[in-house]
Length: 330
Image 1: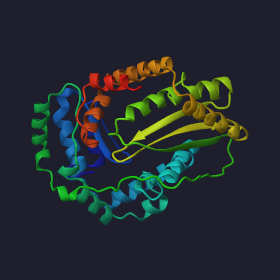
Image 2 (image 1 turned 90 degrees about the vertical axis):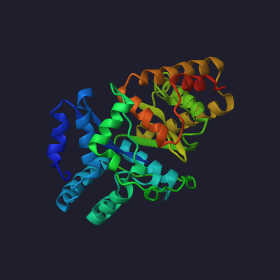
Image 3 (image 1 turned 60 degrees about the vertical axis):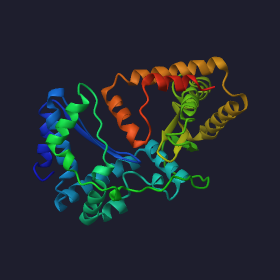
């Protein structure tokens, strides 16, 4: 709830118009978002302002939400293919915040009080920390006018309030495991890579696409189609402001885990020793460029792309320039 609306009224304010209200927390930012018809832009701006900058932060609300988050933690703990990624982050990043669970732990969630929440809100929810992005049938000057009407131009400012996060450095290589009585073994292994701004990012994306990005990838074809060792096997990548990570996930029967891991490592060795043939590289470029271009048909993807310009402190690049960067990879 906020100072002007109850939690139910906040939900109804946009859903009653056919729109939606959502939020998520990632490793480096929290996102609040509304999706509405273009004619309801003022209502969306007003509701988001209320939600973000005038929350009630009452003890009764905290007590209720604490229970909800504890249930979410329990749900993840009951999902081994989620738990394994938590273990991997912990092993890769150690004591850096990237190594912590986004949801927290039962202990940290249980100990958070109203004073800590209010202190965080006052410190972090300021103009110097906020990026507003919009996409769809909206003009820039129109958006600015609506934001001013809704009160966004009166946000508390101050660059001194910016949240500082130390540069990410990977921990010493290590293994983490949890033994459970289950039908499958879930394995993730990976390493730290370059940050989002590094020009090698597109080369890494190409390798990931060819190596573990779909049904035509080397991993899928070898581990699943040829050897039948796993139902699910794929590569993954994440790029942050100061670092990135990449890895491979495979889920298989416990008795075939060593064989599956050996097959993945053999493909990695082949990739390093033999490289990528020209025809395969050309196919990967076409695949990656197609994925990037098709993603632009999504209103949400365009919004995220606009936000990323400032989130990662990078210049805006037209689609043609991004595709040219993919083409330039040798």
